[in-house]
Image 1 (spheres, protein in one colour):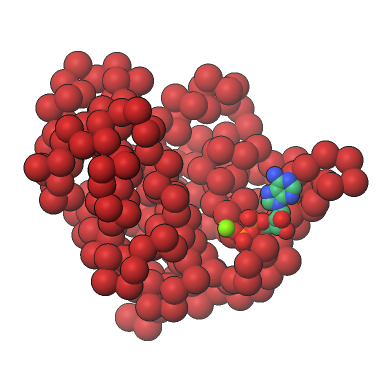
Image 2 (cartoon, rainbow, N blue to C red):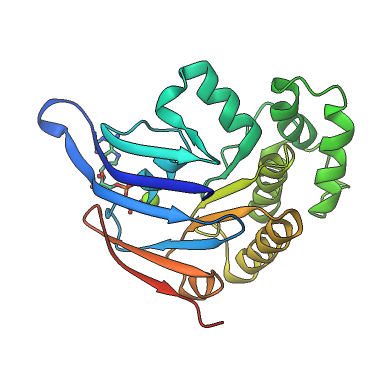
Length: 227
Ligand code: ADP
Ligand code: MG
């Protein structure tokens, strides 16, 4: 069973004259444990595709199944629960909750899932990304790289089988970005997670087992990394 399977997915977003047909018949299959780099020009639909395969946008037509589950069969609550258990998401701009400490940000997904040991597990996850001494800091008190580590810990803490990241290094300098990517790949591999990463960075794309290139809402080409 593929980790992620899209069949002829179409999606338009926006209202009235501002409505844009973004994804145009996208079909894609991602195997378990694969690392896929999603590349292409700005505006080609990379973020929209990522949000769609992560169950954060529903397609207008076509089929999406994740870990064997047909997402269209889940209602909003069911979809939210499915995402919470199985899919970790990392954004370019971190998306941490500013009023919460690092520890609270990371514990939140576990608390939503009803885990009894949320705080201990969140602490361990922050230690694993090298932030054991920043538990009680708020996002504004952390550097960009540290905030992205918190976001990574938050994505990893539920032990999701699928990890998606939208330009995770886009707001970081090169050296800090490299550290985040090293962590992302190391943690993903350690857990056997399937990784889908949107990136403009050729060196990041080159680390993926496959590169998928989008253009104007369609898959233009796919490149398998040399073994
Ligand atoms: P990328 O991540 O490759 O830069 P996006 O997926 O963000 O591309 O966007 C693809 C296209 O869809 C762009 O032209 C963008 O302006 C448009 N778009 C994205 N989100 C919306 C929305 N909510 N409403 C209308 N148009 C949108
Ligand atoms: Mg984007």
